[in-house]
Length: 622
Image (cartoon, rainbow, N blue to C red; front, side):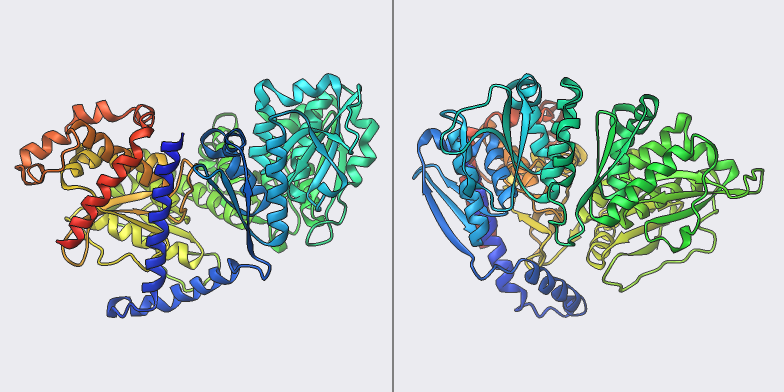
């Protein structure tokens, strides 16, 4: 574990050095080809810096801990430390060699982080004692019947951990007050986090308790419904309820809770069913939307639904679907619409005011939800209609580029060969570019629709242009030091074939796992290096993002260096093309594909990183 931690620390330190060098070079760059694009990027950067500006009471605290406490704070794969950091909104670093915990942030965030760390460490020796000063506006105490405690906890605490992960909270059973002592009938569950996160976790626990102890919610209903009323930034936070019959409940829940989740994501409210009661928690506007969507859902059981005044609503988009495409878009037993709803977090249904159907006519498909989700679902539907009825949406459409800083849509028109190359097998290339850019990318016929903020749209179009350049040969990207979405890696010459794999198969695998876009590109001196692109920088424990991709690449390099006996001779880099092809061969690629096997060799990670640094320094000297 310590070797693994040291390896991650080295990686983090090098990433910080690169970020610092980017920041220092950002204002010194005078390249004429970048002059036009610099001012928008700079304004975006200024906005980000304002958002990330440290508070006036920002500071650093340290805690001396024991070796056993360090293991508890770190958790499996560092997950507990990351969870405490997310919930408290403080930065936490654990120095295992010195057994020191460093906490950085505002005074309130540091206090919360210290409190959470003490609570986690206290669980090692017994129940946590929660006193009155524990509540900094971040605590909900929930009584759980003794017979439901094991059910709520789950095997080895798995159920509680799942809720913590879903709602970004910290939860544990505790004793209350200085005297301690537990009630025989109830256990107290402490839930730490934001108002929204605590309510989501609390209702999830209550739903489980009601399953095990029917009728318990009725005893504490008023306490739960009135909790935290008006305690959000808008001052309108609250909880509304609806009561269902048995058959209505199963319909509102959906298969494996799919309908409930759909309503929750599309309305923005927390929607949870406790027994036969539906609870809607959120701001006044979110609760209103949640109840409206629920009403429309049940109205569909009685016949066609038409939403009056949808044109004036900010949460609705309507698409006209040709009648011959309705079955194709809906899918068998609504499977296609359900998939789109799940992917984009929206509510969709057909509505027709006059009930008229027939060939040559169309029906209106209404999409309800947040703006980004609605646009993503709309473009997905347009793509499906265009497949079935070519030209329906793209006839007469031209390319479009906007300078709107907020959410908007740009268009690019592809040629036949460009479209197939940009789409990839089963759409894998399109999805890769979309996830790495953070924009919405959908192909409607030969037109690429790119939706997002100005920064996201520009990034996505850049990625597409580099992708198309790769068809004609090597891509030259002179400098990435002023970008906040790129990580540059210099690969040893004798490892390049191994890292890329047969026809780039290993790069594609790592891209898919880390949700990034990476390729070998030339710099201004004609030297080849690997660049990892993604709007998500990742973290030490996150399975996605640039950091995750960097770890995967380093694992590949270490495996190659171990197989070669640690040699870094230049003979491999001068081998003829046939030899390089053998090193990228399909057989080798198949042997390398099970990534978990490589990850298990983490103790040598730190040693391998040293070799990577040597090769980088030689590359720069050349």
